[in-house]
Length: 118
Length: 101
Image (cartoon, rainbow over all chains, first blue to last red; front, side, top):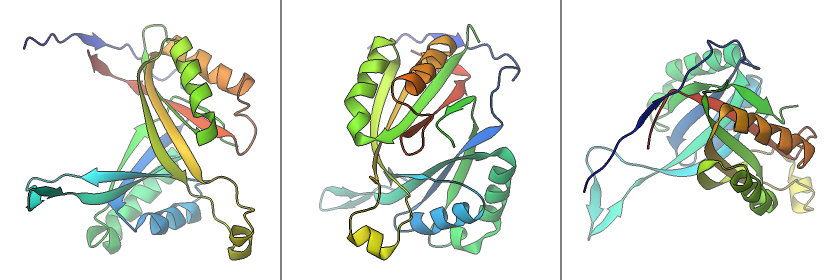
């Protein structure tokens, strides 16, 4: 099959038109730990969060009787000030709970414009 | 922002889903994805039992649009869907660096 790739490079205007200094913080944890994460990010100043169910796939796929067993994950998504996002990311790095059972992974994306954050 | 491409995400109550999708298709947004999610509303036990807690089930709709279109969609979200009022929904855009189609 012939696949045609078309690369479109998007010009960024160097952040001049950036309306906000916010980050979209994605925290991926094992299922059942999202409530703890939400509580924590609330304590750090986040107004709310959205939880999405997800499946994790690692290098060694688990297979029982032909049925693949995936790791159940939850993604906690929140919009937060970049300073607070840095603080949360740092604490997630240091918090042992995220290194053990929760297996927390966290990344932040720069947010350009927002609507509905009161 | 003329040549920029934005990743637009809208999080709202599930009852808005059809209207939001209609808006996105009217505005010619691409790669529209619908993800079911839940909000993180914190309620007391009694409020929860009495059904006084706002809707927890949410829908997250994501798409790719040019900077101009994304701006127009955000404007429409305020004027049509009243996203500027609390407990309606949120939307945000993330700049896309490169796109392969």
